[in-house]
Amino acid sequence: MSLFSAFAVYFVIWWITQCAVLPFGLRTQDEAGGIVHGTTQSAPHKFRPWRVVLWTSAVSAVVFALWWLVVKEIGFTLGDLARLIGPA
Image (cartoon, rainbow, N blue to C red; front, side):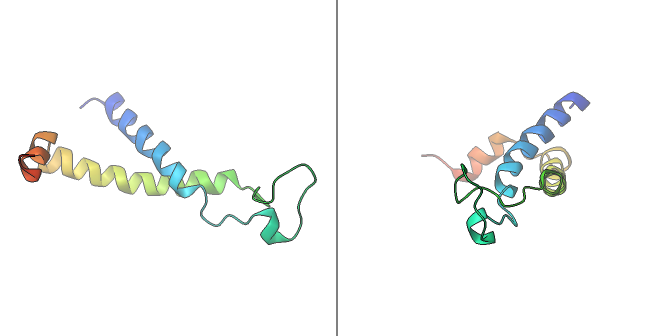
């Protein structure tokens, strides 16, 4: 696998992980007690994008390492997955 392919896999994992990590630790304006006029109650009180980026990168690195272990070191493929599931 080329370096570009590994980066592409990491990027896809990172993007999916970001959607999962985004609500971690989020306080809404309603929970904080101050709603800014013109926004919804569920809008973030203080959005910290660097915190989201750091958490996403850390979780993605762990998921990517597990993927690398399973695919590259153990040699597990989609064909192996089909044999595990069995005939439909």
